[in-house]
Image 1 (cartoon, rainbow, N blue to C red):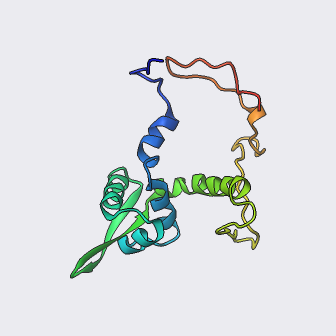
Image 2: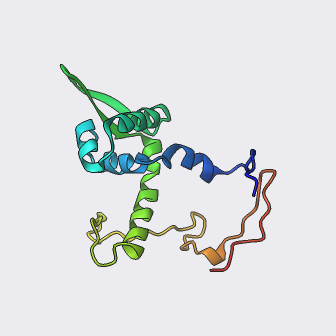
Image 3: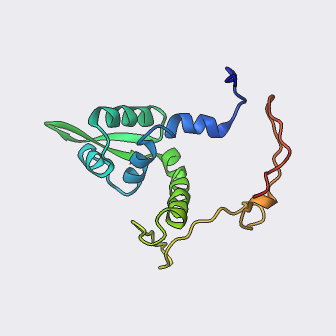
Length: 155
């Protein structure tokens, strides 16, 4: 089967090209948890230092993370999420909830508590009507050339 040299335009593919690289979402997880120093990231993620440095540089260049010096001698930096980075936090929460439901049913590694005092269970709601988004309620409307859909697949 031939691979297309010009895959159809897709915002998911564009986002994954940036944050889908190995360790990138784990970097974002740690930074959102307040662990933004390089040594903390190495320890908590387990990424090789050179790969981690490359991921951090790419996330800073893309405007997802901000880099700030916290020591001059030796020069050391910490990373914090930018507003664009914080917009990815619900993606992390949703991935975590999926992993809890399907991979770690018996032993969840971490829970998030909402400021209401309850354990967070993230859901996606429609900003217009407020209802929870369900697969069967979606109707795709392609906007770019090359897209053909027949509607969401039945589960």
